[in-house]
Structure formats: C-alpha cells, structure tokens
Amino acid sequence: MNKVMSSKSIIALYVIPSLLLVLALIYLPIVLTGYYGLMKWDGVGKMSIIGLHNYTTLLHDELFWNSAKHSFLLALFSTLSLLVYLLVALVLSSQIRGANIFRKVYLIPMLLSSVAIAQLWLKIFHPTNGVLNHLLSSLGVKSTPEWLSDPSIALYAIFIPILWQYAGFYILIYYAALKNVPASLIESARIDGASPWRMAWSIRIPLISEVLKVTVVLAVVGSLKYFDLIYVMTGGGPNGASEVMASYMYKKAFKEYDFGYASAIGFFLLLICLVMTWLIRKLTASKDNIQYS
Image (cartoon, rainbow, N blue to C red; front, side, top):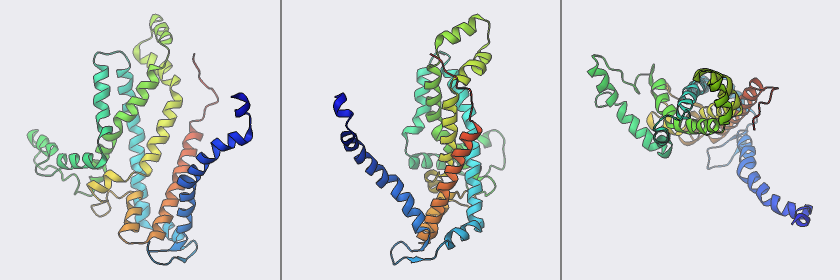
C-alpha cells in the first residue's frame, strides 16, 4: 500500500477527479458570474459586452447600498446572538437535568424548511389574528404593531425568526466544543474554589476560542448572503424596508430580467464575503495557540 501511495501517478488518479469536480461546481461558476457582470443580458437573448458599466452602476445604486446596510445589520445581530447561544450552551454543558431534552428542542427549527418557518412566523406576526398581537392585547397594549407592514420595524421583526432558525445549530456546535474541554481542568478549578462564572470565563471559553472564530465567520457570511426566509415573508418589502443584497439580486435577475447587473451584484457580494472573512480572521488572530490534552 505504501508503495502504491508513494506513486505520483496514483495520487493524481485519486486527486484529479475531485479537483475537476471542485473546479466545475465552485470556481467555474464564480468566474462565469464575474464574466456575466461585464454583459448586458436578459438571461435568454444575445449577450453584449458593456465592460465595467454594471459594476460602476452598482457603486452608485442607492437601493443596493440600502439593501447592503440591511444585510450588515443582520450580520451584526447574528454575531451578537452568538453570545446568547454560547450562554445557553454553557448552561447545557454544566450537567443540568434535562440537558439532552433541551438540546433536541433547540435543534427542531433546523429540521424545518425555511418556507415552513416563514409560514409559521407569518401567522405569529399577523396583525389581527397573530399570537404575538393577541398576547400584547392581553397585556393591555391598545395599539398593536403591524410587524411586517410597518417599514420602521419590518426588518427587525424578520430578524427574530432568522435568529430562531439557527439557534440550535450554533448551540450544538458550542455544546460539542465545551464537552471536549477536559473534565480534569474543570475539576481542578472547582477544587481551587473557582465559581462557575470564573471557570467559564477563564477556562472553558478560551479553550474553544477557535470554534468561536469559526462561528463568527459563519454567522457574518451567512447573514450577508441570506435570502430565502426574507423573500417568502416580505419579498423585501414594504418599500424595500427588509430588502437584503441577495433578494435585491434575485429581483434584478428574475423580475427585471437584468442578469448582467444581477451577476455583478452576485460577484460583488462574493468579494464582500471574502473581505469580511479575512477581516474577522485578522482581528481575531492570536499568537498564543491554547492547547490541551
């Protein structure tokens, strides 16, 4: 076996099919997206080269930058929500009774499709028959809000089901990381008189710092390219109040049939995600590599 695997031709035989698949499914579409961004194209007819016109138009498109602001707001809220998910994971990993049941309950939203979640929260946010407004009315609120029709609150209202949808995913990641922290370290700290808060802050959280960095990248990049639930619930409305970059790109492509401009938006969105990933990794870089055995 060692003789076979030391042969470069055998190694190439194993690697090349996977490499071709990655090139075909990932890198080729990226290159084509950037190329289509140089075209004026309705998605069906003949393409005509217009150079960087789509990209320069994008830089001065107020609607796009408004949708970009909404995407970055979602990224901010998603990042802040990680603190809540981490706190829940810390509690669940502290050997409390019923922790296994709670882990399964938190994971349920991840098992539902985005369309099902959207329909569920549309019922919850319904201005007259919704559960939320009924609850507010029972508490004495006379003028209940129209959650998805009021431009001032529609965006923030739609953040709630998005953060709820992915809560179980991040809680499970943190829970798994925390359970891998050696019990001997926790026991030693407990014997030394450390409080649960001190053990969490000084031992458990530092030891899962690499996992925290990965989840921040996932939350930010995932938020910047988020689309499905927002499109089903509001379609980017009212009047663009909940429009995000991905939904704006979709409208340009499949409603206005401007595939060239939509491709430019998609390629620009890719660049933003790459820059944000690099920036997060740069800001969270640490010379001290904490390890445990």
